[in-house]
Length: 359
Ligand code: GGG
Image 1: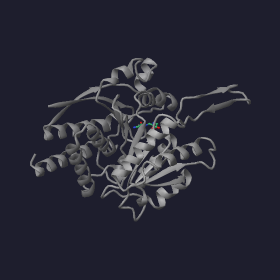
Image 2: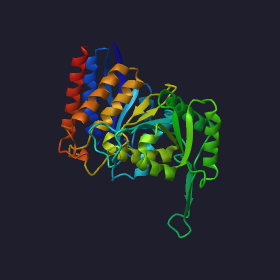
Image 3: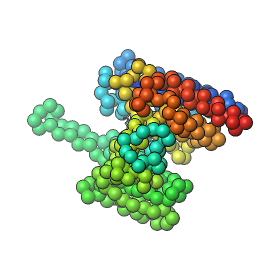
Image 4: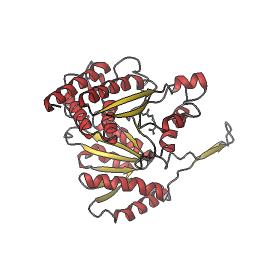
């Protein structure tokens, strides 16, 4: 039997609470499936560690992670540590060093979940966010700190290689879906980076004649996400644009509690990392009311990446059936149930699905 070795980084705030439910459900799936097992190794890295040691992860942290089959990540961020420190010293080095240059974020309306928009039951698209360069390039600096002459610069980096590999992934994904690609740009205002981004993608589009490509300025695209979200299939965006658009996408389908994501190293020469889109949500941390669906759904993406498609399909069906029934709802979805209640409900639904399938 195959054993998948997973590095678990629950992180900060609600991270540990939602990851606990994710593991509980994924353990159940493995037992019922019978064809694979898990070996979870926990890493306590995060803001608490930073306050004790001055580091978000040990100096050899990436070395420790390198040999795992995948990383299951909760959330990062606490008010005791500046956000640019916590994010830049934990999650971004993992994405960059492990060449997780695809951030795949499904935006899908689940049955039974009330989004803020009417007429929106058929929302089902995927945002491919370029994940290692663009606006998140670690290049910049400042001068004359705390004076009236203070200035800072932060440089965006766009490389042909970086754009091409993200775009190819998006084109190929579109080919497996409804063959439509919407590209977020801002070439009217960012007059070097975005015309280049557009040009490279237009050239690449010639290799995918079956995919219908459209470009939209990111500000207009934000409006389209609200006005006609059902029209999208695959959306390709740079790092920052993709980050912003996917929070909006999550809001459109019912909130960050139902937004999964995968940081993918397509070549598989490093582990990929699976994390909910949401952050540490300090306002509700420790109350036991965070919605674990995003993290459990993230587990579906992890199963798919590990080649466990049948288990992934069954877990997704379990999530859909719990959401559709509407019997268990965390406060973000308008109910009063707890994080554990929701995890238990999905676990039970998984059992029912395996029972019915006769495995
Ligand atoms: N679960 C993901 C998380 O904690 N994200 C924190 C965050 O805002 N990261 C920066 C980014 O994704 O761009």
